[in-house]
Image (cartoon, rainbow, N blue to C red; front, side, top):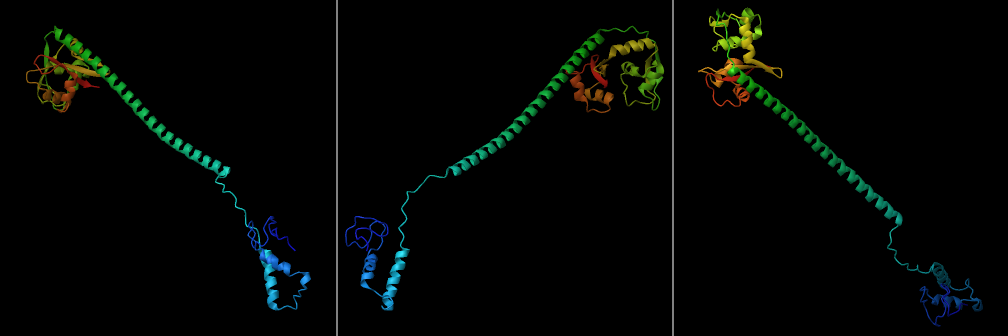
Length: 281
């Protein structure tokens, strides 16, 4: 027989007699009382009882076997597994590092591009400054040559030859013929202002210095070179314009600006003044 003050399932003691349900595990205590009644002293022969009684007892035994104490309510653990926290932290760190390198790479490329552009600009400015310095030096040299030319007085023998220009004959041909040097053709331009370097009139009479030394002296006075460029100090005539001079020396009128750049102090053309002409590079 069971102790009526103790639960046969969870062994809780101190219960009052007549309690039908365990206050701790919730077991039905009436079934245990019923089993106590079905004991040896009752000489209950299950084989002789009715099937209904046997079924009831069998069901009671199965019920007792299936009774399990309820699971104890455990406190809810709101903490996350520390391994999950570490993996999460590593993932965030990897994302941050990736973004940093991505941004840093883009910024580095941009900075490099800007530095290259600045370097190109500096080189370009240095080249322009060098060209500007070279041009200024040339202009100073040209101005000096102009001053010397304007102050020079030639004492020629005043002995000339008259040459009739033939068809397809160039100034280089005439200079080579009379002076033995085709490069002295600017002397012909000096002595014959109506000449055109590339286009001349057939049968045009040309005045030619007989004395070669005079021709060479005159050449040195009206032609000079600077930085491997050959310049001619042209004597402006009454009918000259920027257009006609450009056409005379360059076969077209599109080099007017170039002429003006070479003569920055010349605002207007005046007969008897000299201007600078670039003959060849």
